[in-house]
Image 1 (tube, helix red, strand yellow):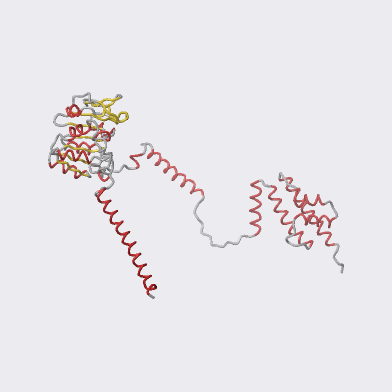
Image 2: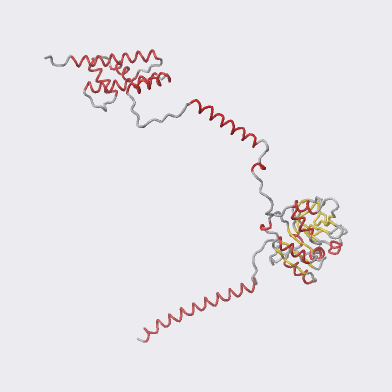
Length: 388
């Protein structure tokens, strides 16, 4: 009895032990994940709050250590408010959702402007017609320009190249392009830099990338890092109408077609005359139906179809005369008629089935032969009647 009672106790202790082990492992995993990642969430490349290799949190921390106040904003209104609060350097990626006017208005409110990974439109609008160049293998190159930040940094890494516009200084030349563009506008500068090769957490420790980043981004005591979003798209722009999107000749052509259609409808509608109300069902006399079909056959010139109708009616009458079934095939009927008349079966088949008239004259001849055949059959039946 003691051993039987101890078995459930051992199983209960084993189950409790396994449950405790799983709970401890889950707690350790949760604690380790929180400790390692520290609440980190996936963000885009060049995001100032991203610790990933292609993020830029490291350069933000360096700027803060140098006494620069960094404000990260993620919508256009917040960026404008931050720039109004104090003279600041504006750092931003390309913002294709902003119109040219919004882009100029935002950058006018800033002190210095640093464009990180700009595209052709931003370069054209903000750097006097500059444009994108080639993309080369990421490698170090000397500055080869008189910009103080580039001179102090020395060699830095370059990957994407830009073509300078009028009055724009190019630094870090390579294969016909430049890794950094600087446009001096007197009281401020507008700079374009290859952010993925210079500013990311992965690239910052290489050569003079960190010094170049601090020199370009740390000129003012305050910095506003604007991360564009789709919600910043200009909503005041009116949606173009279909008339604005189509060529000028489309609208007159559509009006002309409409007028032509209405004119054709009126012209054809007048030919039918007024509508006549007629009660249904309508009884049509048999002779009217026959004459109507005859006119249709005559108008169509289909002699073979007309003869088929005559043959069909004649076969029905012959079946009744010979006492055959109503479902007797036409071939058997022809054989019965030939046997009754004692004539060649091929001739009877030609009259009842095979002959095809091509003209009205041949149709009349075939109709006469069909009538004569039916008359002959009737004559043979009358001779068999019992005289009174």
